[in-house]
Amino acid sequence: MDTRRDPAPEAANAQAICDFLEAFIAARLAEAQGQDAALPEPALCDDGGQISRLLTRHRAQFDEFVVLALALVPHLRPALLEEASAAPGQDPPAQMGGWRHGSGVFLPTGETAAFLLAGGDLSARIAVQRLFGPDHWFARDRILHLEDPDPGAPILSGRLVLANDWVARLTLGAAARPGFGPGFPAQQVTTPLGWDDLVLPPQVRAQIRELEDWQRHHATLLRDWGMAGRLRPGYRALFHGPSGTGKTLTATLLGKALNRDVFRVDLSTVVSKYIGETEKNLASLFAQAEKLDAILFFDEADALFGKRTAVKDAHDRYANQEVSYLLQRVEDYDGLVILATNFRANLDDAFLRRFNAIIPFPMPGADERRQIWQGCLPDRGERDAIAARMAVFELSGGAILNVAQHAALSAIAAGRDAPDLRDALHGVRREVEKDGKVFRNLLPDVPLKDL
Image 1 (spheres, rainbow, N blue to C red):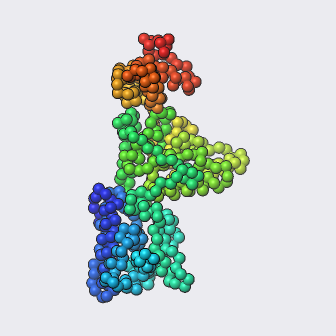
Image 2: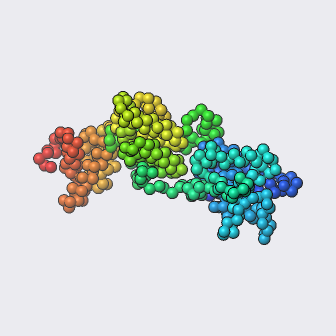
Image 3: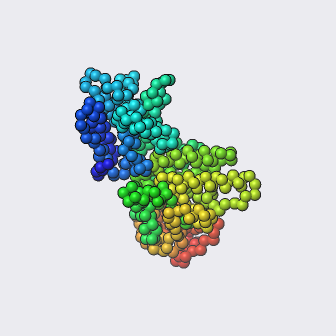
């Protein structure tokens, strides 16, 4: 199958599919009349569009591509099948199958696919029928199906139907986002920030770039380099480190850079007290996330992925079953899954071995804290001088952001144009003491009595 580069893969592939089907139908009809005709090849854009990713993921064969194209084309050019197979004012030939919609549009059936792929070859026709079986990835992933035929009608006379969410994915580039609830216990997370706003050690940034590399190039790795049979689907990463060190922001920025939705999974909604409900919730979550080609982010993952308990009663046994089921779904997910925890030691060692990447998010050093202060404080007054002095306090990036907000609000309330060192120091004391810790002033020239 030829490929070409294009900046808009969905639009380019839609046009390529229409052009291919038009030429393919003409060639098959010419063959049926005893004429020689060369069968065309689709020229799909391979710039990461939904169609190319779907075909790559399933290592689709030519006949599977034709069926998918037939199911999609009524949503692209509703009149194409009729225009390509019949003279103006005439009906398509009987061997084309098809079904006339109430609006007058000629829609494909299984017979349409059988004619284009098999012609009069009986064994090839049976092979086409297998494409609509329950074990094929068309049905397994709920991508397309044949409607039931009328009683006594040929088995392939049912209408070929592409699922609505896949129509959206293959035309618009993304399916509609589901609402938060038990059926989809995850919420989309976004950010107006960019990579320049995230201060991390160079070695951590290098590991994050590896996640980007996988997302951008895994199709080439699996298909062109022949690794599909050796590697598990998807990619699993663990972010571990104290609160406020940038784990959630990093996951969100990855989605932004890769043009993928990021959904943070609410584990409290996933886990149910009713037997069987947890597996049901998880099955729905992963099925819908796969349709969206989304990045899944499990925050505070040790709540469910922690070390397994000894089985003392039925509750313990069922809890361990939940974890095993979730582990399996994570491993089978054909996308990027990120788990975050404040305490790596709380996770089961057996589970840690299943990650492709384990990335630490340490507390920032003094120079990194200065950069974070500069990024968080408003760009006015003595911002840089305040940032340099306040970097002596060992705070996480999230804590520094809280302090910067407090300092700015204090200045506004006092009618000043910018926060000063005393505002920032007061904010640090509040941030430290809210965690039950004792604040120690590391700036002796700014005594606490001035706060």
